[in-house]
Image 1: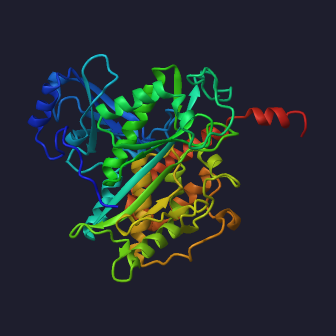
Image 2 (image 1 turned 90 degrees about the vertical axis):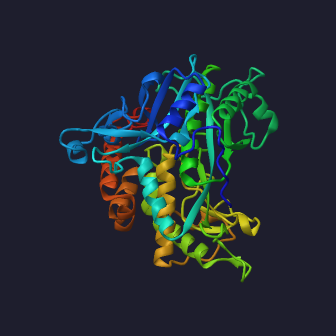
Image 3 (image 1 turned 60 degrees about the vertical axis):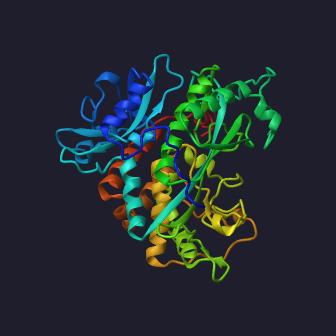
Length: 462
């Protein structure tokens, strides 16, 4: 895959502060949402009057936002993860991410910010900085990674009672789906009013949404993004989740990116198509024109994914619910087998033209933080290149028959991550420790909850 050039309707990434202010002024923006992607991939930040927006005014946040669980709790070693004074981070806007907020009642902009320490160093706990750290390693090799995400999600009825199961919403016909409708055009059209809003919002925000399909689950959809550099793709997934949730809420339903929201439906994934391009020539480095086949780098990269993906699963499956998707008999992968156009494998190599030679990693759930999922998959491949690893032979049969090769729950995944010294070094030891502490706390909190299944089947039977 060759990288696409970004659109230029927003300020260039290298723009000065004055050009960003001019962009706000030209659009008569009255408020600015200063966004920072947190550990879960959700937006934290501040809203600032546009007239007072600058690189310095009000753009500070406590670094503790990167050591906070999804329930709002703090790990026991919180003050060992952050500074003893729980200091503020300095935020700087990435001008290239400036977008209008199309659903806001007043002219509003949203701008993703990067986090720095007081002395100007990139903050080690910021997911965006973790991805940037990995990309710098490829830059040192003269390589530019290219990624295209595919993101699945469900539309579900509004549900304010967490004890009740989720249900598919009614479409234009007034009836919810009761059968699987993979690739059905009519099933997609049932949600036309919501999807029209989604497309309008995506166009206003310059999101590179390429195709839309109906997936196998009831009310399950998938959007594909055009391929480009990993940071812009992570930004797009981050912004799209906000956009899709907002479009759905306008119609009285939820859009959920939970990996396994309904027990009898398929899970939702975030497949990552990835290739390597020469910064010097622009050629796809996964294809060897001399031999007419896959390159040595392709095999090393694939070997790195096979070796290190099990140790990085805490980033691809970051929540307790994530492992319900990775179940035997489902379409999600359960091991690191690879094959040509083999969808039962965790690593699929699509049949395509030489310039589009790529690897599709099928491990990440839709609940994964896109910055960390992309950083992790690239780190695995990078280690394969550096260590000159070789993959197994491609599989032509079902990978499901090979059994489990991945961790079965979050606790197991976190233990594997802590033992992976090479990944810790690449992603940052301080970051990995903080991530592990946050996720361990979430797992412990979940484990204290007694489920309805336990009350139903164990209460009087054990």
